[in-house]
Image (cartoon, rainbow, N blue to C red):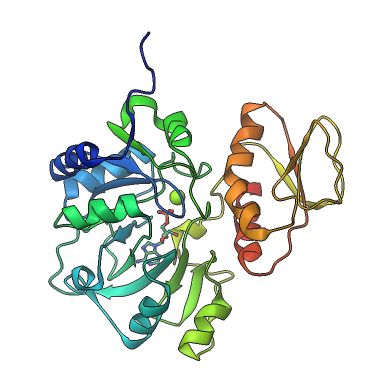
Length: 317
Ligand code: AMP
Ligand code: MG
């Protein structure tokens, strides 16, 4: 029998060599990170970056996050500052993305940064992606491995669902630990959070001893991940409800909600980290079950709950 998932591979030495070879030839691969699955290409190559935008159908005005192995690698392309150094020490490698100014002589593809003077960089904390980054001498441009504006993938099968065989290799690294995209912090202009995530404004304030604002509304696209319609499961969502009609999917949190055929509990223990990890896979599951509408209970706005609310609001748009 033919294996339809033949492009989903588990990671080992042989696979690493294959991937390095592909990346050097500007071919894209999908790989796990601790946040969501990513679609990776050589960030120094216009041809590789072009393929990312094309495959995702991503608007060219939405710049990509550049992933580095170490601070020394990043220093070649970006201007670092004190705030960055402090945050790097505390949170990297990990789910925090920094916006910094590009160096004049940087090697990054202009397309990857949408011709901006700034660039988003991250040091991912997942052993698979780290061993890949260590084996190549260029950084990787990696957006989430989904079609633009869809729900982000948190497993290799999610990636397969969106792209089938259009990606040569999808590395299977199990379910993502965090399940939501990284926090984006602006360190190039006014100190602020452009996209909430696991690492909160409060934690960043504690390290920097400075006020960090949450970017609510802005006219310009400061962080296009903040484009209004994003992370959409393609079904209408109704947020902050107490109950739901039986014919619609009902996303709940905690033990106080009844377990019914149409209910999907994000975390029985009301653990927000667990809820974040389950959010996208739950949205995908509901879509596959062909529900026409999703009702969602109120999710507390503390810690990663803020990021969950942010994504739900955008998915509802
Ligand atoms: P993703 O869409 O998951 O790849 O996330 C990338 C996020 O980083 C998006 O919200 C981008 O808008 C944001 N981003 C990338 N580069 C920049 C930049 N130079 N300035 C502000 N936001 C950026
Ligand atoms: Mg994305």
